Image (cartoon, rainbow, N blue to C red; front, side, top):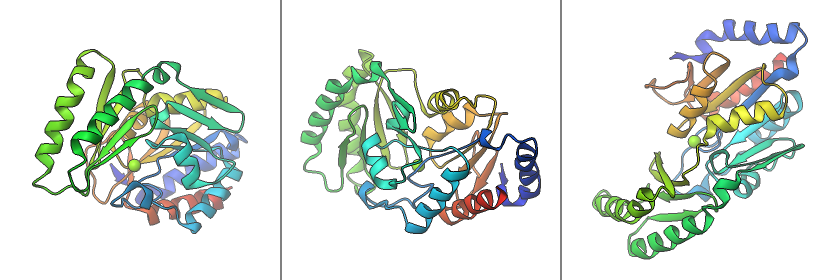
Length: 265
Ligand SMILES: [Mg+2]
């Protein structure tokens, strides 16, 4: 993995080539939200988008189709970003919406009652634990434990594993994990990678150049899906094992990169 700005000359050349052949709208810009456009914070509601990043997004979305792919619910992510021209994928891509495209995975909708039931059970069993946040996002759910003490964590993990086990065994759900979070999803073959390819298809830019930025495990599916046909960028202070080709260090790097994309066009 290479630091993207160290390779800027060759990236600029690639982007410029797309531009010179007159296919600039075939560049698609995709990115995650938490940890990519905002720093990681203690509670999800505190990850507020700064005005200057919002301005940059407004400008990129005028030049390139721009999409945000998040684990948050569609409603939540739209509300955090508040830029009309952007395509949004919520719940890791189970629901997608934007100018002239719309998707809700029906198979995922069927799991809603199960997700609700698990959330209620988790809430009850974890209500005494300081810092545990159970978030029902409709089609998926998250258990955030960033604020849970080291001493309490083993109990949280045990409760989570015991409670989700029967649902897992019945094939109702899948479990994934991210930065200080466990995720419960419907057992449907769909992820950020599939969502990205679906968006490219829906926008008729299947053969275009996709640029994807993300910071967490769920973004690896998108990096993999775009291997050899995109510019994939992990947001991380350090290089680590990833399917991404490049890395950027933090939100201010992301902002600077978006700025460079704007001045290209
Ligand atoms: Mg993230």
